[in-house]
Structure formats: C-alpha cells, structure tokens
Image (cartoon, rainbow, N blue to C red; front, top):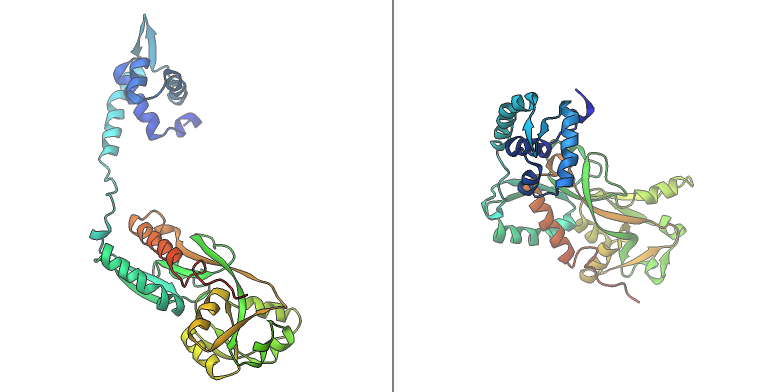
Amino acid sequence: MNAAFASLSLAHLRTLECLLQLKNLSHAAQHLGCSQSALSRQLVHLRQAFDDPLLVRQGRGYVLSEQAEQLRAPLQAVLQSLSALPQPAAFDPARCTRRFCLAASDYVAEHMLPALVAALEREAPGVSLSFRTWQAGRYDLLATGEIDLATTLFDDSPANLHGRVLGEDGAVCLMHREHPLAVSTAVSQADYLAYRHVRICAGGDKDSFIDRHLRDQGLQRHIALDVPFFTATVQVLSRTRYLATLPEHIARQLCQRHPLTWRRLDFVEHSQRYWVVWHQRWHGSPEHRWLRERVFALWRESQFSVQGCPAPRA
C-alpha cells in the first residue's frame, strides 16, 4: 500500500465516485462545489493512490481506464455501506433520561447545585443527578465512569482528562472575627504557626502548598482537625481560635453570613486555578457536552463563584 492510498479520506472516495460517474472535470467540480483546479489536484492524488490514470483523455472528453471501470462497483458499495452507518441524532435535553454523577465540595453542593437542579427541572426533567464529595487526586473515578464531572483545584489538567478553567484565586487565612490575629492586616508565618488549624480534606487541593512551603524549612503547622466539609469548618472557627486556609472568594462569602473574617498570608504567595474536568471518553458525548455547558453557564452567573464573589474590602 503506497502512502497516497493510505491517506485517502471519505472525501477523496466521494470525489472519485463523482468523477467516474460524470467523466467530466468541469461538471464534477460544479457538482462537488469546488473549483476545477482544486479538483484537478485531487485527481492527481487519486492517480497516485491507485497508480493508474483513471480518466483518460479522448478527444474533448475523458473515458475510464480499465482499472477505473473495475473500481466503480466496489466504490459504490463502499459508499453505500458508509451512508448506512447510523448518524448521531440531534440532542434534545427534554428527552434525555441519563443519570449523571457530579463531584465537588460541600460548598458547591450548598450554593451551586440547587441552581443546576432547578435548570434541569426546567430543561431536562428526565435527567437525574447523584453528588459525591470530590477527593483530591481521584482521577481514576473519572476514567471508570463512576464520576462524570468534577470541579477541583490544580495547576494543570492531568493526562487523559479534558478540563476548562473556571477562574483563578489566591488563598487566605480564615478565622473568628474576634481572633487575636484579626487586628493584623496580614498573617505572618510565626503567627500562622502559633495556632491550631482546620484542614478541609475533601474537594480540591486547597492548602498543601502551605505544607510544602513549611516542610522546605523543616517546619509544620498543627492540624488539629481534618474535616471534609466547609459547613463544619465554619462552626469550628466560630467557636475556637483555630485557623483555616482556603480560597479567598469562599472566605469572603462565608464572612458575610458568619462571625468570621479573613486575612492575607504575607509569607507565601500562591494562585489556585478552578477547573471542571471530565475524562476524554465522554468528550464527544452530546449529553455530556450539554451538561458541561450548563455547569459552565451557571458557574459564570453564580454569586458564589470566583467570578461572582464581592470585591475585596478597602
């Protein structure tokens, strides 16, 4: 098999079928909606692929070569077989009955999931959802199909995953509004290490950059509580002098509804990217694509997202 034959596409075969039927370059070009010069270049490629002139000039027209005559019947059979392949139907969300599994933090579940469910009730009442708390690094659950879509934090999308950046944010230190550190404009490393910490262990990777920074200096913070929920973290901070490190836009939202405040970290800089990620096996699925677009749209509109959070205080 020569290289030209191996590179033949469906478009090449349709061009060849038209040429063999009409035996006229100008008529074939008109039928195919291309220029005669472009068709002539395709004919050169086809002649190389089959190692045969295919169309032989005779007088003012063309006749088919012996091999071209032999190609007509099998070529038509191939094209007819291809035309019989089922075509993807236009996706109608109102007729979709698929069950999707989403994974994110309890913050997303509390503030963004209700809007998504309401949108599905209006647009795709046959769709159902299950929600799981996302565990950082569990990309294998996307590969197996146990989870369809996840929102998380990382710098770059891992291999075999598709992703879309939803926004970017920095990390801050959250505390009770009467915490001793609340009198400062920022939290120093010494002050940060002087208090106990709550670590939110579910959802995206929010604070391991802090531990890496400290470990490089032979230091570590005192993590007194590992908990997977923002809601529990808020209650603990409201009753103790514990600290929590989390994204700034979430800290701002929590401070509006709870007796909390936040301060920037003056000893380390870190920017976090928010992603929606899915496995490549679902990338071409019309149903999955539709769900992703709804999630993207709702995220952009939500006051609780990184785009929708209130401006920082002066």
